[in-house]
Image: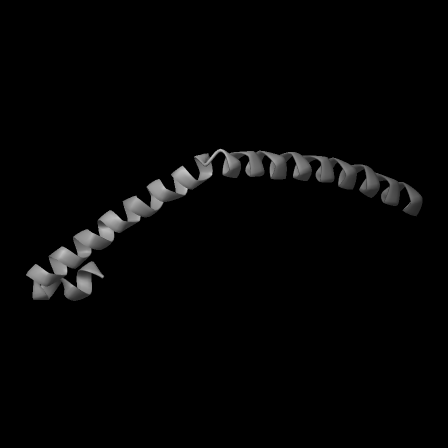
Amino acid sequence: MYQSDVAMFDVEYGRWEEEHHRLVCELRAEVLLNELGLFVDNCLAHYDQIMNFNSIVSKTSSTCIYRCN
């Protein structure tokens, strides 16, 4: 029974390694193509919009300082 568990683990780990390798290769390709960088830049720009909005609102309304941050 123990040997079959080890063999099953080896098979599953081999599959996991193959999938891991595939995912890492895809990630590297995306980084090299700058698509990931573009996505990150877009997300950061979106976050900056709300931070700028909070800054503007908190300057114009003293009651909003605690609620907007």
